[in-house]
Amino acid sequence: MMQAPVTVLQANTKRDTGKKAQYGNIMAGKAVADIVRTTLGPRAMLKMLLDANGGIVLTNDGNAILREIDVSHPAAKSIIELSRTQDEEVGDGTTSVIILAGEMLAAAEPFLERNLHPTTIIRGYVRALEDAVQIVDDVSFPLDVNDRQQMLNIVNSCIGTKFTMRFGSLIAELALDAVQTITVEHGEGRREIDIKKYAKVEKIPGGDIQDSRVLKGVMFEKDVVVPARMRRKIANPRILLLDCPLEYKKGENQTNVELMKEEDWAVLLKMEEEWVQKTCEQIASFKPDVVITEKGLSDLAAHYLMKANVTAIRRLRKTDNNRIARACGATIVSRPDEIRESDIGTGAGLFEVRKIGDEFYTFIVDCKEPKACSVVLRGASKDILNEVERNLHDAMGVARNVCIDPRLVPGGGAVEMAVSRGLAERVNSGAVEGVEQGPYQAVGQALEVIPRTLAQNCGANVIRTLTKLRAKHAENPTCTYGINGNSGQIVDMKELGVWEPYQVKVQTIKTSIEAATLLLRIDDIVSGLKKRGSAGPGQSSQPQMDDGENVDSEQMLQE
Image 1 (cartoon, rainbow, N blue to C red):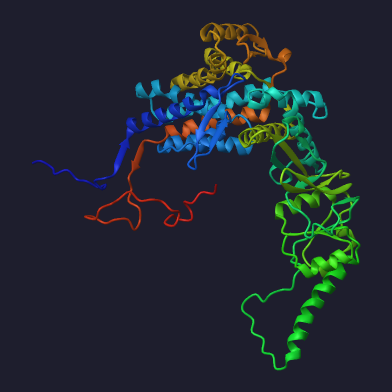
Image 2: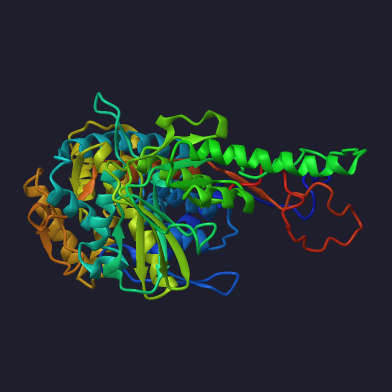
């Protein structure tokens, strides 16, 4: 008797299972890796991307490219997430992560064809990861963070692959100055370096890139409240920071006041004025030169402050206010009644409002010990400035990593080659046995993709170069030979001075292998699930436009 087929899933649901799903994921991984493959190394190509608004993005930063690309395959999406994680975690190595992850997935394909179970492959991968980190540990060596020349070399080798390398060591110096400015020592060797909050990059179109510099203090795009009558240049200013409004408080909700006599109205207005006057007098009694508030400041308050010869700035961003507080040693006060002498910042050497182009910018500079800074970037066009900013972000990330964990490894694919050789040796010596041996060795071979891509991108003979490099590493296990990305020659990285931070390297290897193991575990992809509240059976289901209204708050990812 024939059994009628049973359909569990809906008719329009697409389902890939088993091998098909795994091969689909591997293909997606390879496809994403191919997008950014040509942007690795000093001879990197640029990508030009058109975004939805018709603007263009010119970059070779792996993360910036993949951020703009819209992909539909779920596995490709998760691989693109890797570069974002890498960018937030260590700031550099976004391209290498994607290329490695794609290669790790590709390395698993032959084993799946031989019907090896994904769990076995993953066991081999995880074991290889532990040994790889061990080998990178052995290759790494410590660095003196106070040696400026050496630090510049490291940051330079990070930006050597970027668009800004033609400006010499300018960006490296900017990044290093910014990071050293905002470093806060917590004793016992602990350091806090918060680039996002305290090192703000201000892009001003116009001028020359050589004019870019790190300020010993902060700047922001604001002018004084009454431009004609408040001082725009003050030496050694006393700065008071507020985050409360200097105008009469309106009621939280609608307030009704019944007045019986006409004079009461005048009294009411007078009380408002007196409150503003009292507040301004309280502020003026501390003799500040500059008052900066995050909220509003009424014309009347401005008048009283002007009489006291105080310069005022209103509606400043909270983040900018925090930076000023760190730069000049002030404390942000929430109520005018609670101002103390200790809250006033006296660390700044100069307060000045300058006009650059059409806009007015306020500079609070020459601070004694600024723990926050602004990096001013000048350049010919917006596209150039955006690219310089991305490069600067990478460079600051590298400088920060080296300051937190001052260990280095050789660059130019030397580490990958050393790990590859080390893993192969462990297999040959019988340290890894059984079925895991294949996947374990495949990780080593997959790591060779970095030197191979470097050689490809500068047009060298790939097979000959890689064979030579393998021979060098086989002869002398402790050598630091890698590929010079400019010429494609094999050089000792110690002499060339190309170094990478230990943290970036380890994070790259860990992230790529863990991502590959995650995607290999998937054996079923079900797509086409019905959205809640979408058309029922028999209704025409037109493609639904997502306007952000019908999305769960959990699913809404932050930008």
